[in-house]
Length: 198
Image 1 (cartoon, rainbow, N blue to C red):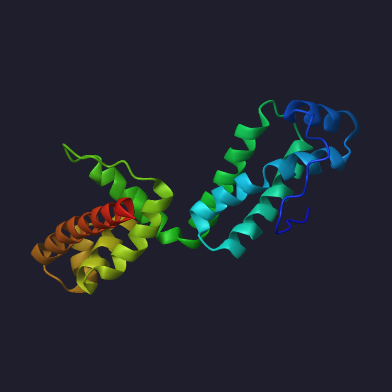
Image 2 (image 1 turned 135 degrees about the horizontal axis):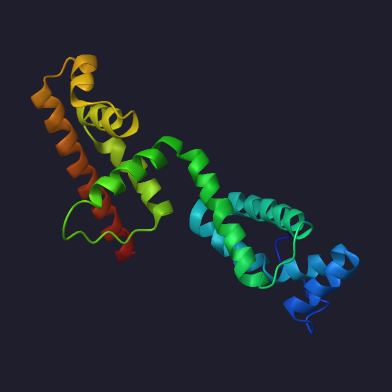
């Protein structure tokens, strides 16, 4: 399925999504499916741009989503195409981000769980955006804080194990973890505010 720079005129514009799907399920002619996918090219490109930012990469994602959609539709029937294809696209982009930010994804999960324990919090962030901010915020930490945060939240090491490995005192380890977690949160909240102002 080729993704051109412009969306061509839909030859079956008078037919609904459900009608096109029904025809596809009847004779498995990809022409019906091609017309259906063409309707959602711009929607998918918009979804992908939200996650990957670069247009060329977003277009590649749309191509990959087209292939996945064709494969999945051959396996089972879909009732509500628009919401289904949106979910397929979003999950594809999230998996792509997770592949790119594997360690950050694990760290984000751990820190979100820790932050959830804090009273009075107001953390309404998109998970995929949080992954990107976490990457940036980690690099802004001091090397001692970064090391201790990763060892504690990612590698699940105890204070004592971290102290033994790093030669820091227990008091230093606790301080680096506590301050590192706080600094990450402050940095991410700052990035969230800056993003909201754009």
